Image (cartoon, rainbow, N blue to C red; front, side):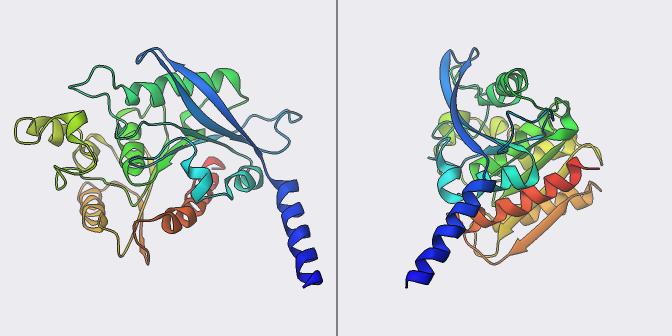
Length: 270
């Protein structure tokens, strides 16, 4: 037992030594007139380094917050150091779906993430302010949000991903408070059509975004992810698509995020 405890201690120490630094910052959103918390993870030797770093924006899911990713993927600080990148986890509200809501002028999370937050991070950190060194991904609501923001802001993001994302919201008209952002589907069908990622990708040209999409075989979003994959194939838009065992939970995206970060790292280096 003593040897086992000693091994655990050295394992913890080694992980600590190679882990990045985790901070929580508050960013003022001019569009929403409020302060929003974000986790910012930098590589371990960020302050001493003369290098600038690519950035991955990581979006949480419905009912989550800015700190959720650290709970489900505690390895993120280690990954930031290992892959020499920054990771930013913004608070996207309880049910924003990362939209600029057409019915609620106080909810402008597309503007916040894609403009205000990116501007803040590039102004206050040693980033590479280039869309090809800037990626965005997320889980569930955040998976939809990441693809939605990237497709609509191709001048900002060059890479995007989704982990078990709700990539077509229309089959779920009474779920996850989406109608509080878009209105009831029976009277606001155009909003639901226009704000669904599966329709937004029609505005893409092949090569405009590096895309990575994955979903668990037991996930309730599997069919909408398969439909998105088929649509991208029909549009001849290159993308990586994976299905693997798993359901809609933290164990799935806590593991999947490692693949996304590695995918982005390889693309950043091209």
